[in-house]
Image (tube, rainbow over all chains, first blue to last red; front, side):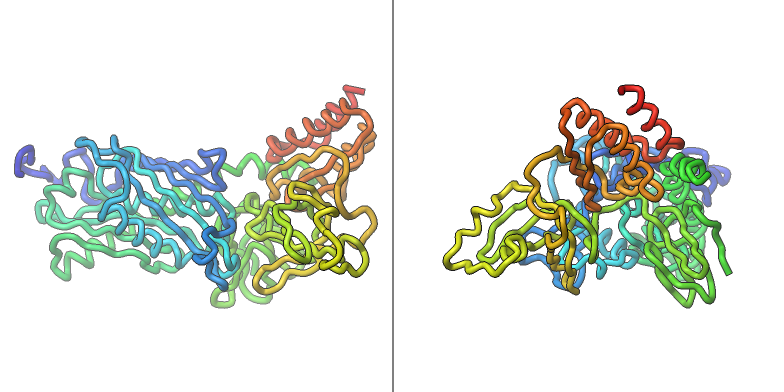
Length: 248
Length: 226
């Protein structure tokens, strides 16, 4: 089990990939990458590559699943068989079903679901390449895709993970740190009001470390939130110029 | 106090105004402040703040002119697909313009599955059940013409400022257009070549809805082919 474990995960205050404890991995978000979806987004966070697609609001079938007063949000988190080193058996499993559920619960609070009673909004999160922190990056991408689909939202949702490796509290764990570290805490937030919509933890923190990790996560979220907004603006910026030009 | 200019690109959760402002479409109020709920362009008219969404499905509203396609016949009328999360309902008596005894008359003679209908949204109830009406002149079953489907969010571009784009499309080609706010557009014209030109132009508008000088380019394109 310990095979391949590096002796130290942090050397001279630098992590295995050269980051400082409070640094994120390189981040890239692009909105509107799928033509046939109502909304979509692609995110790269370090070696993570994730595609999110949104369909809806649309009529809910089967009808008995309709909610007469609100729209239903359905989420599917799925890892591609080639997303990890050892081929993952395709299809939903215990882990991905749980993650789908927590992602749905992380996204629900920002949506005005009562605007579309009897309808359904489908969110698909496909992990093309995984390197720890896929559920939080998936949430980040999914909320951009929801906004891209024109679905009314109170705010975006931004996710990031914090954890502990070699006794140091770090931001945005990568695979090695997730595997050999002492704690991993994915967290999703509605950044405007700093409301937490997802908080899970695996491993051990002292109360003091927990607070440190939370602070660190919020710092990371601020950066990712800006990238999300930028991705949305980037897609529509040409339309802004056009509207201005037409006014004359 | 306003935090944005007019026609500014905003994203969900952006603070737009604080204080004595009315929250229009595409916005919501939280703690007395107005925020944007969609990606779109702000529109500020005196004390009204709204955001025009750049994406999204068609949501039926009373008074909208739409083009529906019959998906089902039920005992008293038809269910129409409106290119929306919600289907429309058209009563047989509404279409016939008189009382219809559904026990004696076979209403399936009036409309069949797949037929297109130009209609107006008569009523939308709190459960989003949509009633359609065809009372006004020109409304009713569509018997001829070409139907084009585009994204409902881009329909305003086809109409243009105060109908300018629509006017160009009609005057330069001699075709008549009926624009359904649900993204379906009916083109009627004698010359099939002209109809094709309009279809091409509309698809171009949809593709380039975000680019500037669109009205002029469409005009040049259509006039050049005269």
